[in-house]
Image (tube, rainbow, N blue to C red; front, top):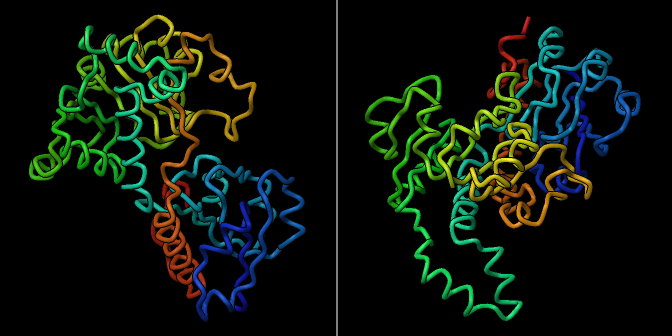
Length: 337
């Protein structure tokens, strides 16, 4: 292949700072444009692009893919790829790849942070101290005896990929009882090492879990899976943790579950419709619901170390494409012609 051409769609500063400096990357022609432009703008910038490297929340539609005749690979900067038209790419023989595993421990740490933050109502406690109500809140907890330790809890993990497994490893150190559900059960020795127990039925997991943590990609089968029926099956007074994708949750149903008391709290590192605007439904819920949601700004997977690991994977795959080889971490296998 002649000079390889890479079009980046996302934050230019991140692309430049995390791309390794070596003879290969310096030999590649690179152009970076922000998300949110019309397809025509990207096509005009690099009509003969061989590779697209894209932000995990960038929309990559069929009309863009089909207008790039030299395209060989689309690579997510993260783990998510649900905004890339994988079917359109597959029909053109274009690989869609992600950085699977790059941020497993980073996101697992965020999941644990949100679990502990919800159990101890960290945001509410911070407000109480700032308002001079420290002793009042402390005494209320002591009288009620309502503060829980993670070791008191049963945690249900829905999905046990790389992030789910890392979360299980951390939970083992906290002595929590951990169940998981997914289509394929792990080997017994792996379950023992992780300290997890398989439940074939998701409904059974929801019924017994004090905390339910989501570790799934967004697919047509999982989108809005956390709906009214899902929340009704959860244990009364339980907690939902989402460090995966906001599209997994029906926000209106979540608000109702929090308002009714079916859920005690929700810890959310990601919500639907990112970038989040002030008019988002979850940011405009009633005061009694607002106090039951602990947000973090989708930072679980963007530690410096995880970004460097991700970009190492990306450029290894770009080198494979340059050499006419098959990349790793292909996520559109079923659509490839």
